[in-house]
Length: 543
Ligand code: ADP
Image (tube, rainbow, N blue to C red):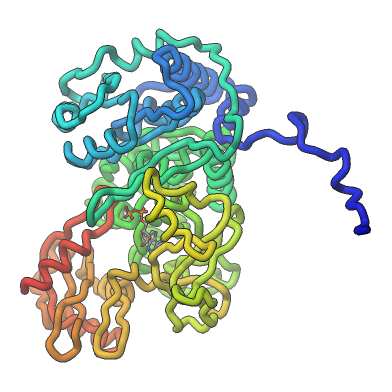
């Protein structure tokens, strides 16, 4: 007879000691602890936490009166503005799932997502009426449309049966929401950009959203004095979960409809902004903003960047301007950031350029993620921590998606072997920090060598006259593939030639990694600020 486990008896979970985790509870907490504190700023509008909480509960109540509940989807097409933020609470308070739409998609893309995600309600900012009205004609289902009439939006046709503020007034400010019966219940649906074929619908659960919001607050050092400027689109992985994370500390959300440096610098000053996030392209925009737009700050502004690899030259330039950079890595499938480059005490003695190279590594897992490893994608054996052996970055833990909506094959493939396969290739350094070398489809196979496009871009960004750069594979008779660089020069760069750039790369990289061709001009980008490498690959193939 086996010994009885004394800890199994009479110690069951019950409502007093086990509650489903949900980021919605942060709002209840903040409205109780900081009722009179400014929760949301948008242009001249201010909402205290009491008012913010009321607006979210009204939204939930009004949606419920229209029959919205568990198993339903509510889509929102809006820039960073109060309705988009409120939807992160009001929609899941009904039990429904929030589908924040990428507002830079075209009508066909929007129609696909509304159809695939089976949205029952669409809340849409009038700025996007042209694309939405077109999308609605392509949709073969009925949908309740509610217009947001933001005074900062300019003109745009009203498409729906009511406007957002009237809709809120239909709702009950004392609406009592119930936590999900199970924290595994879906909270949001976020579509990947789908560069090839239709996008995939990534489903998040309440538990993961709660945890990643907490992870963000820990890693980025948020607290109740934090003033967070929304330079990152809230539609991108639910604003990397900062939509919930800032509320989790009782911080202030400063909305911003679009990331324009001419607005960002004055807003930082006006509201005493302490934290903001953005893709490296946003940082680069701030670095290259005209001098008359830039301002000096009394205290360093914390800026977290990710979504694409930040070149060390961009990190260094931001730090010089008075920003303190935190480098995050993640994907839609990991609720945004899963990984960060934890700062080290030893960096204090380094010069800025050297330190920025360290900071450009993707780093270590969030404390809220269970495991991160670089593995051989076939055997799942870990690669040695030698900074050289390439494997695929894999993640596991409670901040990995539930799966892809209505796509069991893609889900099974992504989770094969009990790991989430990121599709990113990287190495592990001796200190355990991960460095991404490329997306698996981007790496260049030149003769017997792999060339990391990120490494070549890193060298290009250090050229004093390079503003932006992207490197892709170009077919080559002898080597199969060689690097082709697409470069945007800084304004007033003068006569920088293809040979100058190639020579610069030869001086700063192993010779075989230097581009064999350089094309000057603007770079095509996705709506989340990533260079569209597939477009450049086609261009390179046609050269
Ligand atoms: P999409 O796949 O639609 O572009 P995601 O936001 O999910 O949108 O993109 C995630 C990908 O972005 C990662 O797989 C990785 O290739 C890239 N990425 C994100 N953050 C970083 C980073 N800090 N460094 C390098 N690459 C990054």
